[in-house]
Length: 105
Image 1 (tube, rainbow, N blue to C red):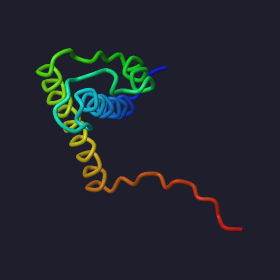
Image 2: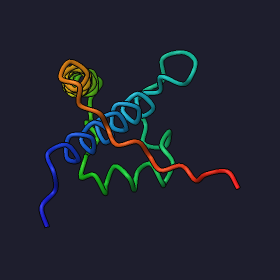
Image 3: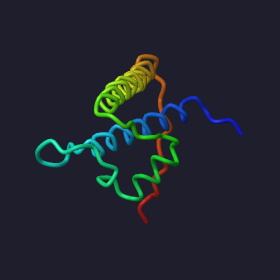
Image 4: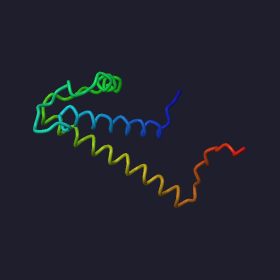
C-alpha cells in the first residue's frame, strides 16, 4: 500500500530527531570534558535503531557537526510546516475528529 505524505513526514521528523540525539550522544555531549566520539556511548538498541533507519554515523568531528546542523535544519523545516498546517486548519475552521471517550457508567 501507499504511505500518506503526512505519515512519511512525521516518520521523517521522528527519525531525524532520533539521529540528532544519537549524534550528540556519539560525540560525547553527555559526558564531562571533551571526549572523542565513540560508538560505545550508544547502547546496542540505539545502534540497532540507527541501522534500521539506514543511517551510518560519520567518522570525523567535522562531519558530525555538519550532520547535526543539516539535520536540525531539516527538522526545523518539518516542524514549521506542521505548525503551518495547524494554523491553516484553524483559519479555515477545519476540526479534527474528536477522539472517542468512553462514557462514565
